[in-house]
Length: 160
Length: 160
DNA sequence: TTTATACTAGACTAGTTTGATAGGGTATAG
DNA sequence: CTATACCCTATCAAACTAGTCTAGTATAAA
Picture (cartoon, chains in turn cyan, blue, red, purple):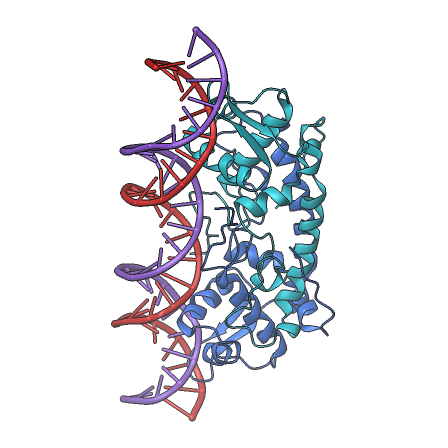
């Protein structure tokens, strides 16, 4: 068989972001678009963004614990951005939800770990190449904020 | 709990490359360094690169099926590069082993799929941001070859 | 103060993927 | 003809994902 293996559930591969992260980002965009004086209810976000409500609860709670959101309970309650949208980067959200961004554990600052089978890290060719990937990815994700996402759309290019 | 969840097994996340891909790349580098006139045995690669032999068999077979390698059976057999090292890109190998490189299925050309819960793909903010990530990643991975990896090492930067 | 609303917490589950291992089969050099 | 080394398929345990379920607790409005 000379077919490329493509995992079913996710169409593609490990370099994909999780549904959870996608939901988190969409929810934050929705919150950034909403009235900042009144909390936005989970159920409203879930409905407008097509996200399973109970799953979204977990996600927003997580973001709250990490100081991104603030919540208000009771009737008329919901979530509000704690930090301004232009101070919430995609990288920050991804690190909270999916973990470190580095494509190899040995390239992560926040969660460095040596590869178990690595012979000489300093001379590892794979590490060297993916270091460049990590740098580029980080540059984009850490400089793009929820506020940028809320701004007018521009052209989206296809890739790979 | 205000702790960032980090998967145990892999230290980091979905944006990591798989062991399989790492093994494939390491094996190709080893093959590129070896004498091109004589096949290099799986067991030799496995030993020198610290890769489980039977697992490596699968990987090399896969690379052979995709026209990267050539094999010779029997005594004195093994693998040889079919394409020159400077014509084997990291991106090509990763697509064979791990699947499409795009961080979202809706950004992949080779395996495009619409996100099930997407409301308006053209205006999807997440898609727009990750499109840039995909472009950068692709640029690095498709222009770096096994031959580059074999060349002298330069400084490796940490990221994320 | 009642009651509806909304957040909090964590256990649980079905399904998929990963990273292997096992056990043969097949070709080839000597 | 036999030892060697690649070829191929099947199977498996552990981990991860994407949820769901249950059982609350806190707050605000009426």
